[in-house]
Length: 341
Ligand code: 11C
Image 1 (tube, helix red, strand yellow):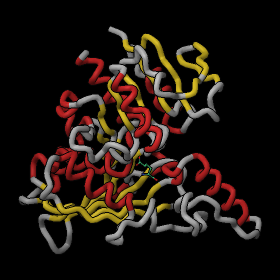
Image 2 (spheres, rainbow, N blue to C red; image 1 turned 45 degrees about the horizontal axis):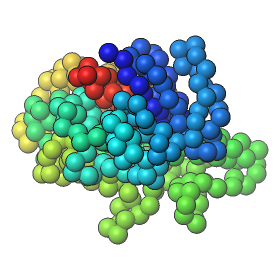
Image 3 (cartoon, rainbow, N blue to C red; image 1 turned 90 degrees about the vertical axis):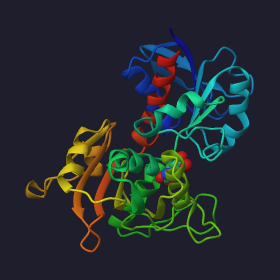
């Protein structure tokens, strides 16, 4: 069977990776429809040697579409995903629009692929920083149980879009040339105060919530509980933007419910699907954003027992935020839907 597939946000950073992965994985595409805002409509993109003109997305764009991958921002998803569902498509949504809706499964295939078949039209793709963490923790959760997670992130500017990448590169040049770097986008484009990202670390990703955490931090808290289907996991997150282009890094402290052996943690991670263990202090081997960029896997290393709590484990988790953090996770879900017909 082949499927008619629509990509909404086809000209964006994630949309571009979705198209590339559909081609690389030889996804059974019958017709590929590329959709965008009016601004980018008319752009010509290539898929399997074919030229496809990007069309403006609207309520009637989804006639005959089987699978629609949305990655054009939460507002576009809220407006158009229901129309795609109305036309009979399964929506895989990369935005924050439906993640906490009880009817929308929130899926990381390595963790809860079984939720995919329970969808009512919309399947939500989690936030990038959540995806890589839960993918790495899954085999440990199953074996030892998890009571508590304390995570600090070191997130790439590409998570905030192409404009943020340009801003980081421009500011770096300005600093190196002895000029004043001008903040324009980060930390949050729609807020009045901006901070320099070049040669800096900004402890704010997305807007502050009433509880003093940022939305990015609260996404990690809520999404982790929903994906594991376990509200008892306590999660504390601090999310930081750093001047890296691709690849989010995370320092994760996890407390297990049961005793563990480091050797077993190592072998569980080495055998886990989608995980690459890179952990050899003797050869200074550990996950690096520069190595993870462009790859689909989640990289894990720096494994070491907490010095105070024998059920505590420290780890370093790195993945390409545009791939496993977004496009690849979405295409994995699409592949499972395709297999289920
Ligand atoms: C960032 N995590 O790095 C964000 C980008 O909810 O899908 C992804 C936002 C989302 O800025």
